[in-house]
Amino acid sequence: MPRDDDATPPDFDVIVVGAGISGISAGRHLRRLLPGLRFAMLERADALGGTWRLHAYPGARSDSDLSTFGFGWKPWMGRPYATAQEILAYLEEAVEEEGLAPLIRYGCAVRAAAWSEAGRRWTLEVEEGGERRALSCRFLWMCQGYYDHDRGHEPDFPGAGRFRGPVVHPQRWPEGLDAAGRRFAIIGSGATAATLAPALAALGAHVSIVQRSPTYFYAKPNETELAALLRPLDLPPEMFHEIMRRKAIHDQTSFTRRCMEEPEAVRAELIGAAAALLGDAAPVDPHFSPSYRPWRQRLAVVPDGDLFAAIRAGRVSMVTGAIRTFTETGIEMESGEIVEADVIVTATGLRMSVMGDIPFTVEGAPFDFSQAFAHRGILFEGLPNLAWIFGYLRASWTLRADLVAGFVCRLLAHMQAEGREVVEPRLRPGEEGMERRLLIEPENFSAGYIQRSIDLFPKQGDRQPWLFSQDYEDERETIGAARLDDGTLAFR
Image 1 (cartoon, rainbow, N blue to C red):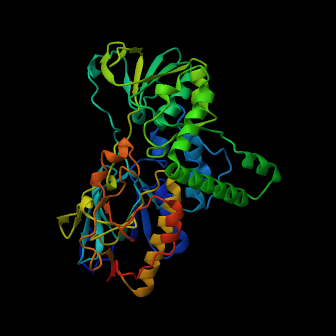
Image 2 (tube, helix red, strand yellow):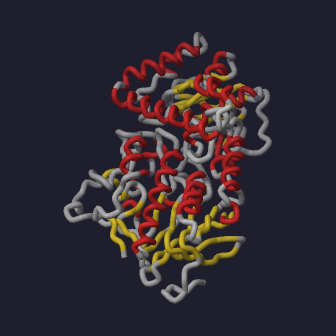
Image 3 (cartoon, helix red, strand yellow):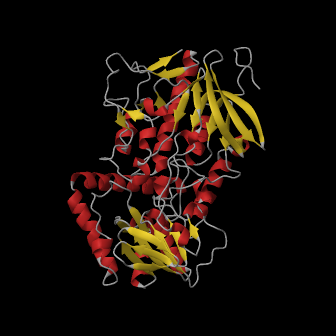
């Protein structure tokens, strides 16, 4: 185990925790911008892919446009909404092309992290190959994502033990589960349900989507008019990707602003589009008329309107209301309606995880992230030499991963140039009484999976650099031009 003093150098300059989208972006920026640094990437899973390998349910796909969900530096040439297998192949290519494969240690789980001021290093307790050992680094970069990969959110439904068939959470989809000719009841109406229902219907199942309240389902073509115009021109991949990326960012930004500035008009458009796609197959009210304004929760993108097509074909039914109890053969609603099922799928959402639920200590004292201000949503007040990537909720996660990676590498380069070993965010005089706000406020984004746990996350303040706007256009300017000498970063 490394000695905790200045005489023994740390094992690495930087350790990146996680080898998903955020970790790949971090690794690529480190290799390109700071080639002299020694770094390693620790991945708890046994293979690359994270979400896209874990989520093995039928039809698993992205609900973000791959022009922006893909990396800015690696062209995406396929359809905008890709399958999990297509995304996995893209990530594997990125790792190979950027020379990251030898730097990733798979099956390496971080169990604890401790900062020592004497050694000016982080020491990680890791479990690798069934054994515990220590790894140390000067700078720790958390890229592990924001949800619990071990289990999803599963409410305690009355009578759950009575149901005679399998009850499955999408995060743990059993291999070989047969769909043909079976009745599936999917509890939930988010992106997972919108994906699973048409996929199961295509496999020969009948599906009932059981939702407590409606979601905005947003039907979008899985090939844009612009892409169709550009493909015959045989443009270089980088040019094609950049054009499609700029168009996607523009459209996302414009639509999000419309949701904030004219929510009733956007609501009418979304509900009207659903009504047109449904025809007489299902009523808009109560199944497709949410009570909240658009984009206060995630929109469930429906590529090529496949969910609506399955409803029109009679393969998918909508049930809206509260569940009274599970029965031996399905679900009984508070209204008295019975939903017969052979399989119940609890697509009830994610469980949030703060820093991978890893215990952190500073000089032996536990560090409570919920009490710290987040510096641009990247660094943390009172926590030395640690950065974090948390992406966007209304735009592609990867947009922010690339922004943050650029900022962190600029910060590390500044420390190298100035001969500094430690950076720690500090409140400036007069900021001690600053308002302590949730990192994601309910008025901004009220999705249940966020609000169930957001009080455990770091806090934002009421002024820069303690704000976390969740706005790409804003952050592209503020993070890109962020000063490192504004008095909020203490170097030593």
